[in-house]
Amino acid sequence: MVEQGWTRRMIHADHPVYSARIEWERNWEAPGVAYDGNHLGMYILRGLGKLAWLLPDSETARYFRGTVLPRLLASQDPDGYMGARDAGDHHGPCWELIAESDMLETLLFEYRVTGDAAIREAARRLSEFLVTDAAYMGGIGYPSMPSTVPGTRWDHPKALFRGMLMAAHALTGDARIPTRLRICYGHIREAIRTQLETSGTEEHWSSGHMNDISHAIQAPAVMLLLTADPDDLAMAIRGAERVMEIAGQVSGYPVGWEAYEAKDPRKTTEHCNFIEWPTACRTLFNVTGQVRFADWAERALYNGYWGSKTKDGVALQYQSAPNQLVLAPWMRTTRDGDKYGVNHGWFDMQHGPGCCNVFSAEAFPRHVEHAVARGQSGGVAVVYYMPCQFMAPMEDSNRLELIMDTDYPFDDRVRLELRLAQAARFPLELRIPTWARGAVVTVNGSALDVVVQTGSMLKVDREWKSGDLVEIAFDFPLQLVWHHEEGCVPGAAIQRGPLVFALPVSARWEFAGEGQIGPDNIRERWHLFPAAGSLWNAALDVDPRNPEHSCRLVRMANPGLKKAWQYAPVGLQVRGRRVTNWGLAGTPERPETPPMPAAGMLEIDDTPVDLTLLPMGCTELRMTCLPFVER
Ligand SMILES: [Zn+2]
Image (cartoon, rainbow, N blue to C red; front, side, top):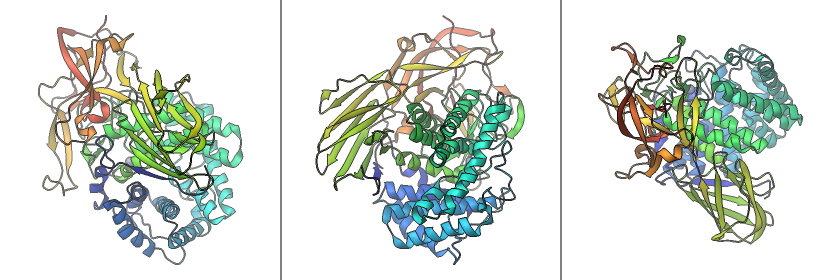
């Protein structure tokens, strides 16, 4: 494939499983998240811009190009400043820098899509402003935020170091940009080195906001592109591994808020981290080619991201947990009580400080952007499976179109159709996730005679012609992810492919917002409690050595025209028994999700109960980590 030229991807917006668009639209015009200079609104710009690109014929695209972009361009003053302002938030003026950076990235992206000279010029001026006039780009970040000093805080690297300045360099050729980047990335690299060298306790990873650490983890890997020093890459990999060691939940993503924390299924993760963590993981995959990082990104999105949203995609939890039975103002993030204060785990569209509300819109557009990429062997790599269409220019004015049809992650089969102007030889790389036991890959109906290695990119190098059909049938076994905690019985979550299953708990929704309940009210807020009589305190009667023996995967019927996350296309039928001495924590007035039962104290009812576990992303109240009946 040629380097230059712009590859285009489109998602099938009406696909019953993937459904890309409706989930976000209602939040866009919400007061407080407008994009007209408001720093929070800037978060949404990239998501909106990418959706306009993914859905070129949509209302979204018309809205973005017809309303948002003209307003944005009109806001630019002669110096290139685009008018971002601090919305009175406690974070102060560094938000302006984030906002201006977001606008630059949006403009650069839009220019690459449209080739519009006016947008290119606006991007060039903004880039010039950021490099020259903005004192905070003097090499060490914002002067009032000593955030990139090694070993202290790493605040806001997500804005400063996102790599958009590299893109600006490609656009403008400004030789000052790589120098600045080298200094900025260098500070983060040193901070991570210090963390890794002194680490051993979670406290060492607690100096900085979790989202920022997530984003910073990828910095040394990006630094590699500037330094060619393999130590940089090794450091990024060790950093990511360390985070998962300390904080990796049974649901497959790290736990924490202001800090990474020791894993515990009732501890929460901030919604923003379901966007930043996958971003770092995708970067690590892109740089290393190691499939496990792509797997990590998928797990966080399908389980964490969807697990913290209402199933229409509209409202979200600021913080959510694998085990959550009560979403109310008194819920706590940590086992020890109020170390990090109360936890905003209820559903709303307007939590303070507001980051997640708008940031949420970026999660899937960013993911789709990386679905199909240039492979390490020079061909085309299919990295993330989803219903989409991919187009790319190739050598000798050839052109590839790839149509991917699948109900992944709810189905294990993927169908890829290639369309080419002329036949061409190139390797097609297919990601075989680490959780696959194997896969059968066919080309035009004939099985390939290859050894499929899990956790690798399978290369199919041959001459391709238009109409060729590649089909993948994965074999995803059931696996248990254990959680061991001192003083508690061990618990585990059952996972299959990218999906982690949870026991859904019917909820009583309590309105706690302002105004009338209805689709136009963005000040709705809901607290959730387990409905009377709903079973949550179960032990699974599953053979841990052979979970497939005691579980049955079933397809669930769609009771209407519901989206996949609303009705759960698959379920896992298992036998369980009630744990009679495991009740809610807290007080009757202020109930809380309990920890795992104390070790040696499990009292289990004799009567078996039939349970249907659902993908965690399809649930609101749930128990994902459960104890097991001893066999
Ligand atoms: Zn947030």
